[in-house]
Image (cartoon, rainbow, N blue to C red; front, side):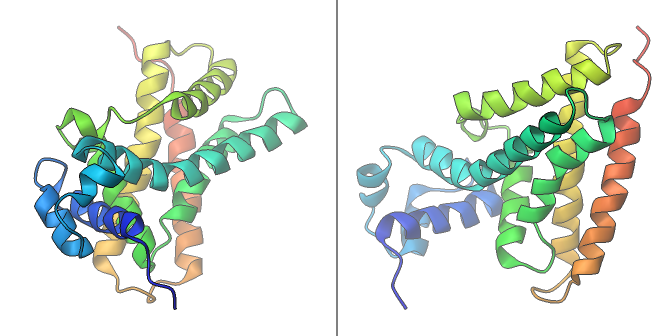
Length: 209
């Protein structure tokens, strides 16, 4: 079995520690110790702790973004105006796929996404770039077409809710189960419940001001 290179070991260690302790609670020394690397390795491979955070986040988020884009492309090829339920499923489905219950990698992903959503450190959120912006804006535009009564601000809030609800659910599942113990049927049921709930939340009437 091939040993991971130093860069990959640093990414693995940083993902584990950022997810467990947050950005500010994780030191470069702790990352390099867990990775079995020398203290200068983070600077050599990434430039800074903030850039390492960005690399960790992108490694986790990019496959999700790609699947979300593919799902939206499939929907729009069938109809220019997919239903709210279809859009929710295309957006949330990849999150469930990448955070499968009973899977150690899924557990790390769920913890890291919760960290990105809740960590007070600006570095936990400032890593996003054009690719992430494109995915968000495409879904915002698609939801806006089928939910024209919502203001852009409320629509963005509700989309953040999809991320938060899914990530918190997956995190709770991982904290309650042992790796390899959760059944695929349980994952599928949770995904169906989430899509039903989130579709209703997205479709609710605009909040009166």
